[in-house]
Image (cartoon, rainbow, N blue to C red):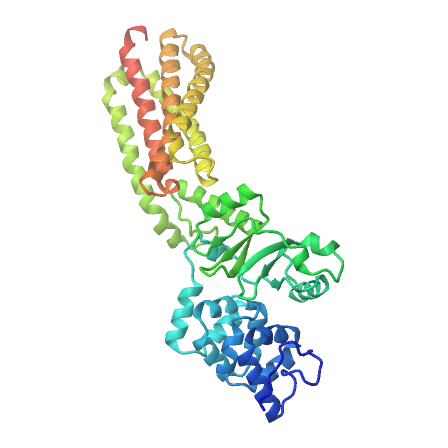
Length: 451
């Protein structure tokens, strides 16, 4: 009569189907793995790594495949590295690619590359593609070394696992069901103060938010802000956990993006570093310097239109840089505030009118204040009320235009699908110079009788 194995056999019992190494025990183990894969996975997780790998190494890979998908990814990864190379190669080829990726994500990068190096080229190419994610996506930002736990585990067992894992960035633990799907979360402080015998199911809380591996950074930032999260789970199409995005990691990436935006705004490459080679720096900067030269000629051509006026009133040439400098600084302030709002999702392109109207008003009020101070200085220098009136009026016009350009230019570039950091500064400089020169010299020409 055939013996029916019970999934409830005690792990330390002599009848435990995952213990012995004799031919009979090996056959019983194989039958247990095939008939009760979910229970076998639970028993494997409770065993010592060395003992479990020794038992599984005696089994053919086909007997391990069904059970393997029920293992926690961290346990599966440890077991995989402990098995013979032939088992590793076959398991990685025959498991579902998504399951293999989740398992490889638990390993250090060097060890991951070693395992990918021993499998067939076609399988390696497929897994490598699945392991790569778009720039600034959730897959790039996540930490794959996330420990998963089951609802039936106790607090004491969980703390032992956390101590072994030594994940200093962990803010909570995530629970999965028998199929490995994400079901709940428990803050780490709740586990720390709970009694050792309490099961995790009693402490479980709903997961507030989760994202797919292809979610973009803007969506991730919005979820962190909306739910006030410390970490955010990343899941695949089957709701199985791929990794965790920690808030600190997101902040670090945002800071790096902001620093690269600063470089781009002045025409330097995002890839350039302080110790980059001179030839690399020249190659990256030269195109934007050439473009800036063309815009400078455009501003100079405006000055050329009023050559006769400047020749008649040489004081205008002295004051031209004052108007251009003040409007340029005002525009840079408006540009920086708008760029920050776009980066942090405080505003979208739908807010263009509100942002523009605010910056125009700011430019007008600042223009009046600067015009008064500038007018006093010009009067003490030239004793000419006409020159004071010209530069004061031009200053207000130029700073209003600068505020308008600083708000609108980056929003228009975003609307056109362009990187606002890459070209905003050059466009802004062109607008402020052209408008500032034209306003100052145009008003001076119109009021020449007062000069």
